[in-house]
Amino acid sequence: MTSVDLEALRWFDGRTDPLVGLADTWPVVDWSTERLEIEAAYALGRRHHFLNHHPGLLPRLREWQVTKALKALLLVNPSRTVERCQALVFALAGSDAPLLKSVVRIIADDTTRMDLAVHCKGIDGSQLCIVLEVKLDAELSDNQLAKYHGEVVRHYPNKCQRYLWVVAPRETKRTRTILQRPENEEWRFKSWRALLIEWQRALRDDEAETEVLSLFSEIWSRTGGK
Amino acid sequence: MANDVDVPASLTAFVYEGGIRRATRELFDLSDKRVLEGLDWREIKRFYRAQMAARQCVSEWAIFATDAWELIWGGLLDHWIALTPDEQIGNPDYDASLSLASLTEPDDGSLWFGRVFRRGSRVFYAAICAFPAAGLKIKVSCESGSKSIKFTEIAEGPDDTGNWAPSVVVPLDVSPTDLQALRTVAQRAVEIADREITSKPHREK
Image (spheres, rainbow over the protein chains, first blue to last red):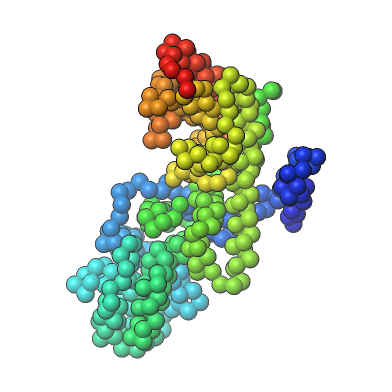
């Protein structure tokens, strides 16, 4: 339980009065308890976390580099591909996330120009497609989301097969306007900040997952994180 | 010992735990509403508690810094004229983020607290700085117009801010910690500045 340092507040209020002394007491907030709130907010309570990793060693990343790196991260350890994709989907969709059985293929920045597309199978055998439209600095262009939606619909005709996300540093006014258009109703927004923290939270806390630390740390810094 | 100072646990965590440091810097930046993104209403209370902890962390640095500064630099610059907080913070020539400990901190996550002194046209900046993963050091500069005194006897060279940081570092993961080594190098810094000024006097304002 914390309590406010009323003496300090009274001093501040009465500081023009030279007779009011400054009490030498200060906040009685118990740091060892309060730090747990920071840890919980950022999922820090694990052995390995990207925020404990050294930030900012790479030069300024471009969007295509981030998407290629994310694809590589999902595929580099085949025994962890499904798990990492599942963690990504949990981070994006929370309790609405489908449960994955296998990953068929992952495409990054291909001829369709979609940034990242994870083609997979759900545990019920359904074919699923998770698409990320990744932004670092640039805004969405007018028709790109509708175009990508059209591409995905061709191969995944049912709405429940499609999970479409825009990931950007923040939801700008332009992003909100575009997402509110009827043709874009299936697209959702997630900030990089929220995605990285939740994705980290959903990953196993073991040595194999230290592979993600560098990339997450770089993306965090690149997208405005401290 | 005379130059011992207690180190708050929050400062130890900020300096040596990257996760706590980066999260605290995020939470402390109230201008950045992104920290609220992705929360649902059940999580808002936790966010506010985390923010309170972050503000406590930075405030405890400020309180520690005022005591530590006094133990390291106190009395060494009595023959200079000390600027008041208003003069120092209000002057556009001085970077407020390097002056008032609890306001903000530079991009590398270091924490600063420094005071400005004048002697004629010369300006002496006496600071302490908590470096991530390292500990406490002093930072110093002394300028007169475009001319800067070189503190090569005690430090390798000026940093990006034009300040000199001797390599002497005091750990912040023990409490209390002994600041004598920093006071010794601070004394040397003042001697170097005074010697330079005495040997090259120029028109005082």
